[in-house]
Amino acid sequence: MQTVELDRCRGMRNRLGAWARVSCLLLATASACGPVEDASEPPVLQAQVQASESHNPLSLNGLSFNGLSFNGLSFNGLSFNGLSFNGLSTSTFRSWFQSNPAVADEVMRYIVRCAVPAGQTRTYTHPTSGVTYTWTGALGLAPAWAGGSSAPLLEQQLVSACLAAHVNPYGVSVPISVLGRGAQGQPIPYTSEELNAFPKQESCFFGNLFTGQGLHAGSRGTLLGQDQSSARACAVVDSSGSQRKSCAPLFFVGECARHCTLDPSGLFYSKCRYAGVEYRPLVTRLRDQDIYRCGDGSCQVTESCGTAHWYNSCRADCGLCR
Image (cartoon, rainbow, N blue to C red):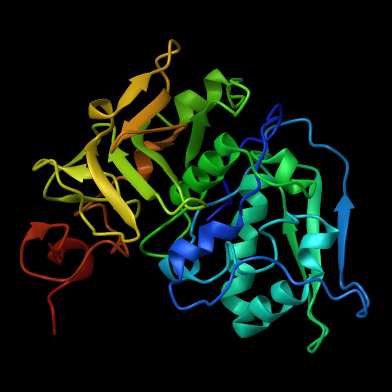
């Protein structure tokens, strides 16, 4: 599948920092927060700046639950040093990364995508294996934290919402459009072509992993019939009003409109309030073709074999169970 999730970056001038608490929430087994500097060891990271793109960058979602719940967002040395040379060269970051390089690579791919502007990358070389990992920026939601500073509240919320929006329970790539306002109130750039290509209003996402307030997802009204399914099952609901798949640590809050205030543009929400706390949310949109239907001739990852014409018993696409 072509990599097309309209993650936009330009114009975001918010901040991000207290990265220390993000993983304090996600992994209770870790012991201490904060980076440990080790000036005696040579640096193994370099930040590279590439030519800016003239259009909003395209990327895809597929962050796994293992990645979202992996101990990485506060115990990895990024808490106080951010996504700068100092942050990725600490001994705590190295220890975290080496504990599970495959999952750490996945986590960092989405962290950088959400926080760092397009045209920039972050690169880390594993000191033992010599393997170099390069992660590309896209949305630029956290310029302060991306530059090595601590995170202000709105950047914490925006990066948390961005990570939540990229979670996919099936680990497959589904194009999505991401809309909302940055920490300074400016909208994430979009075009009429984008809105037309992604007509399905899918979900809202908000929360704050940095402060231990968790991640929340709501539905914007896209209903799935009994024969329909979507790989974006965490917040796309069926006719009962329930999400198709439980997606912890995402907590489903029902309809977005119950908790969120619509932006004057009508395209997204300006704020959401839950349990007495106000958040800056992001919303997502889907293409029509990413709502699957039993009988379309393809056995999707969201469908299963059976005897009926339902998404979870789709003989037409997936055959009889054997």
